[in-house]
Image (tube, helix red, strand yellow):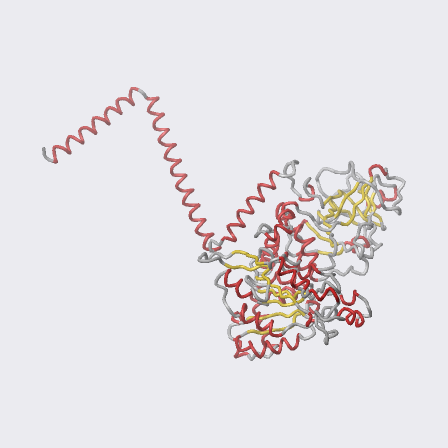
Length: 613
């Protein structure tokens, strides 16, 4: 049988089958329509799936090129999805537009339609006296006052913070409210936490929690929010550039002021919402000075200062166990990334300004223009310089040694003093221009969060001899993070610690740590006053060779993996946080290498002879 006849029979068979279907279709038009419609639906679905698959594949490839498909961004995406799910489901009260309205937010509360004038706070109860078309929310407004009875022991409470408001209004307040304009900014937020006059404490206790809440519930517009900082202690009312700098991480109008300025403002002003965050709210009154005949004391509320702005999700993971067990705590990484990205968005020329700033640093420190070349090839190390308390006594010697040993290798050591930066922008450029920071605990090292990716922070841990004064022991822990170790935890920065010894204290230098009589000698030189010997008041020296070893071992050498990083640090340093890859895996992650507790105890107790001093 030839091919031609086979082909012909095939065509004939196909023709017959087609004719049969057409015949069937003519006999059963309804069935034909169903079949055709089904084929169309199937084709559309397959086409849609193909297009969707191609779109997803293209999007993944695009994002992969931007983010280099690093594990950090994968984890960040997973964390965002988890947070979105929790935002939808937690609290039991349904979703809320604003974080201060959440039932699971124990640190914030708000007051509606509230005014301040003639030295008094009162609710707006005047008909039609509001600038928005939203329903009036005047019912059940609380009678409430602030009490400073619960501030830390070392605080000297500032009596100017008097906040008392009651409902209903009296006649004089009604007349005042009728002429009181509303602020064009709808939400005014007062933030507070213990020790927020200290920038590091402010960053961790106030800004971290607030940032997590505002990530969960971002405002519709940054212009809708104005922030005020409440300083509870008298004599510590200065709102530093550092407060402005770190609040810059948050979506707000950048109109930042102190709460005291709001209280003492003589101009009458009304607010759609006045929000308080960082407080404890109780349904009783402890302020004996509070007296208002119009107030039903059974419905009275009192709010007190709290130790921090709580965010339940991040507080649960950012505790002692969370820091010791990998990277469960992501809140500080969120805050650092939000801080950097927001300043970059606000100033498209920021990176160019940083390069110019670095170039000027090199020129001002004697580097000839022809020696500079590409400023990005240089490593600029900032040594934190203080003029009072915790003064780095031999800082000039360290800088001279750094110049001698490393200037030809394009390493420049300079002094940095945050107090000499007279604006938020100046602080930003001062620290973003550095590749590394070295300083004693508590000396502007919080600004290290502004360093570029894989920048180095070396925290010098003070000498805390247990037999003389245990005060400040938390500043020198090596088996767990110091407070600064928490701030840099989980970020793409390298944070190391070096613990000072007896030789760092230039007193009674003829006696060693284990020599009898050291305690008596030190107390005599400090007029038998432990406070003068406390780490926070003591000036110090630093081993010049240690600084040189840090620069040579870390700044001037690549870090191929986590294991190599650990070996370099093992003898002299503790690694609170590093950003490295493990083994053959080229993906970099945050990693921590704390000392064992037995090794940490050796630092604390040293020779047993100490007990007899």
